[in-house]
Length: 310
Image (cartoon, rainbow, N blue to C red; front, side, top):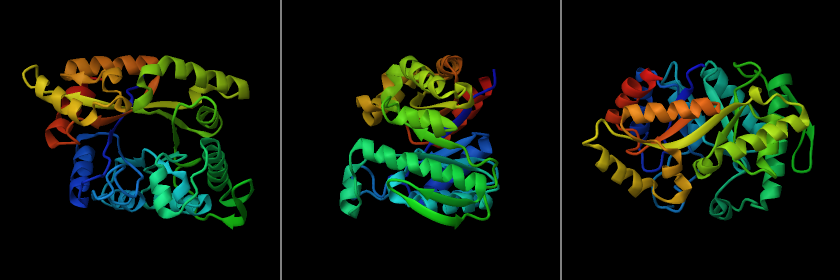
């Protein structure tokens, strides 16, 4: 069984550019596979907190690195017209020599939309818009032109040249577990399915649901990389574990973060065992929040005592 891709999630709330860049360069030096940003115009629930814009930040980080992949967990489909997004994606994929990961979702924070005057709509409507965007992106990557007429978007003979550096295109990551709207989009359009932290207690059920949806449309579910995001509270030894656990519970203790369900609180051997469990379930990508937001000490420990042992 291949080693899963290990990524680090660095939501940029409260970070300066230099702080995000330092963590990204450290991850690259340590051989960590990817880093992931969020796509919010301000920190959710904390509009006065500094927060760098997602796409600009990803572009800067990819221009300063050589190996590591950079993506978003996940882009808000509502913020960018899909044809403009397709052009942005292909351009940044060219700039980075094929190191962009394209995470996208239907949008999660209504307040952002209200402040911007953007339509929010029902979850069904947002999912319909996401479905059309996914079709447009596939067409742009495959044909280097978009000619699409849908309920929400109409694009007429729009060239997207050059196409992406990666072929057939940057891996499209769709996050979410909703069985009525999101998982059908994953089954039809995604290269990677990401299970968010709030669904960590339902892994086996959601995997079965996705496989059933794939079977219904004739897609081999093994062609979709299964991804998971989870909080990891990594302690160097048993002595430091209580303090690490306390900080993790302070920052990530609400149910939506799935700290307990994720099972990634402990010393390196315990974390390695849990990652092996996730690997056995079929997860080929694991994206980790760290309890201390990517300190040098934790990143070093992750690389040398966890990833090296997988």
